[in-house]
Amino acid sequence: MLFAISCNDTKKKDSEMDAENTEETMTDSEETMDKKMNNEKKDVSFMLESRSESNATGKVMFQQVNGKVTFEASLSGLAPGTHAIHIHEKADCSAADGASAGGHWNPTFQPHGKWGDSEGYHKGDIGNFEADQDGNGRITMTTDEWCIGCGDSNRDILGKAVIVHQGTDDFTSQPSGAAGARVSCGGIIQ
Ligand SMILES: [Cu+2]
Ligand SMILES: [Zn+2]
Image (cartoon, rainbow, N blue to C red; front, side):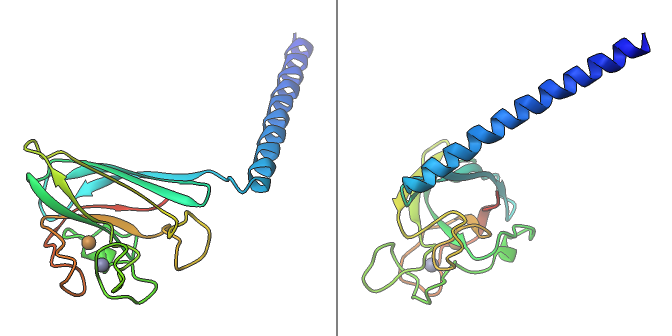
């Protein structure tokens, strides 16, 4: 009886190990292939939590493909109308008003502005989006000016935060577009 149990045990462990080894080998070769083709896929997704006594919540996903990062956010519980959304400098949403996330992420020391403006803009200046009558809104953008975990401090979005504002970004007021209270916040953490 004892012998039978221990024998089964050994068998099970062996087959588990085999399965693990196979998996590892497959992952390795996929990674090598992606690196060769400069085609490494990376993504990070997280939730946005209400701040400043709002009901605004949301979901964010960043995905990197072929050197470009696509950002997609969907929000609900917003006041109908236009809202600013930015990347702020710290993945710290702990403060009730979101102030712990710091100012706009601005590694290149530019003035605040509209994304792509020749006068300059922050790497976190995503812009504005509309919330409908039910308080739902979506925004998406794709850029090669960001990366996910590449370690280049001018491009790497990891460790930053996404913040949605009560009001509209006027793209002019310094340093943050006069967009009002921070109603939703989420850290860009894997
Ligand atoms: Cu902001
Ligand atoms: Zn800005």
